[in-house]
Image (cartoon, rainbow, N blue to C red; front, side, top):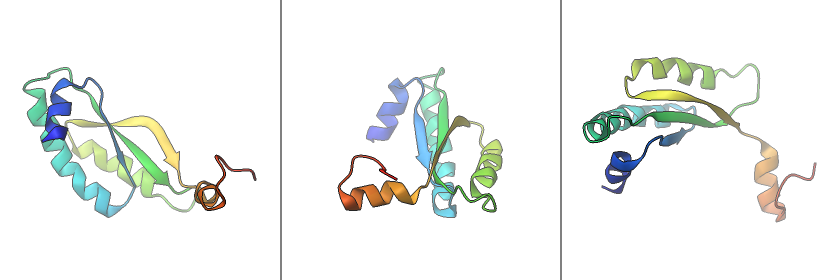
Length: 101
């Protein structure tokens, strides 16, 4: 319910997803929610941000996810990708605010 209310008043909501099949499956529902909210908020521009994207050049999940977004009429791809770095996880374990490598 809170998500629907937020979409009615938001201008540019960002939807973070991991480039994985489990997160991609949620995009159908999110696309429908945005479509419903646009009846009350016609200027709504929802964007998807891929998070935890692999930095390995042989892994193409982020590119595949971006191509799938063409199938959704109410969701666009943001020009931001947040990479998955082991350094992020290590800093939490070591109690550091950021990578010291």
